Length: 153
Length: 82
Image (cartoon, rainbow over all chains, first blue to last red; front, side, top):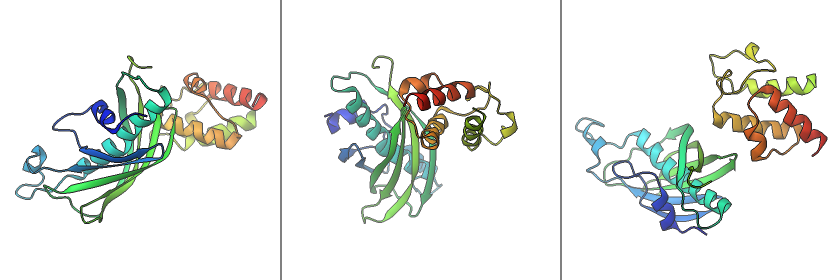
C-alpha cells in the first residue's frame, strides 16, 4: 500500500499553492489531513485590506487537495498496484461548498473527506473542514477527474 | 428501441448546460462536442444509465461512448449479454 509520504510527494503542487501539511489517516473510503495557514501567505495582503482572512476559494482548494487529490492518488495506486512511478493529472470538475466560520492567519485546520464514488476516473467526495476548536469551518461536495499521466497508464 | 432512447434522453437532458435545449438532442448528438457535456457529467450520465437499465459499464464502454447512438448500442448489448 502506498505510504502517506509517497502520496504527499506525488502531489502536483508546490509553494505557494500547496495546502496539505500532513495526512492523518487514509483508506479506500476516505482521508483526513491537516494544514496550517501561515501568516506570510501572499493572499493575506489583499484579502482583505488590513484584515487578513483566508479566502473561501482557498479553503475549498485545501479541501480539494486533501480530500480529492490525496485520496485520488491513493485510490489510483491501489488500482494500478505498486511501482507506479507516474504522477496523477487532475482537474476539479465541480464544487458546492457552504461556509460557517472564518479562518485567520496561523490557524490549523483539519479536513475530513468521505468518498461518494470513484468510477471512470471521476472521484466525488463529501468534505468537511474543522478548526483547532473542532468547530465546522465549511463543508460541501467536490468532484474531480483524476488519472495517471502518460508515463503511467 | 424507442423506449430506451426516450429513457436515455431523459437522463441526458438533466445534465445539459443552460444554453443547450433538450430539443437539440438527436440520435446523432455527440455528448461533448455538440451537447457541451463535460467529461465529469458524462460519468454521471453513465452511472444513471447503469441504474436505469440495471447494467454495468466498463472503462472500455465509456471510451467508446461519444454519441447518443453509441450509448444506445452499448445499452442494447449489455441488456442482451449481461
